[in-house]
Length: 166
Image (cartoon, rainbow, N blue to C red):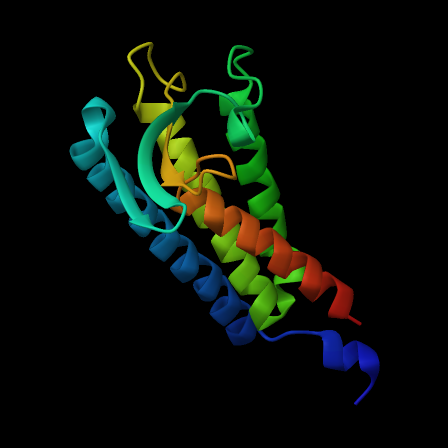
C-alpha cells in the first residue's frame, strides 16, 4: 500500500470522525447551557458560592470577546461567528482526520456554539446583542464557563495533534 492510499480515508471512517465531532460538541453545548441555567438561578443577586481553595462560583455577564476584552466595542458576537466558521473548517479539514483531532474540533465547536447561543438569545437589545454567562471564578484568572473551557482545552489538544501529525 502506498503512502497516498494509506492517507485516503473511507466514507465510514470519515463519518465516524464527523459523528465524534458532533457528539462531543453536543455534550459540551448541553453541559454549558445546563450549568449557565444553574448559575442564573442560583447566583443571581450577587450570591457567591465558595467551592474549594480559590475556586468559587460568581455570576458575571461578558459582552466582549474572550476574557471580556472589547466589552464596549460590540465585537463579541463577531468573534463567536468567526470561531464557528473556524470550527466548521477544522471539522471538515485535515486536522480532524485523527480521532484526537475530531475530539479537539468537537470541544471547540461545542464551546463556540454555547457562547454563540448566549450572544444570540440572552439579551434585551435583540438578536446577537446578548451577553455570555460566566460563573467559574478562580480569583486569579478571568471568570469563565464550560464553553470557554471546551474551546481552550480543544485548542490545546488541536496544537498537540497538529504537532504530531505526519
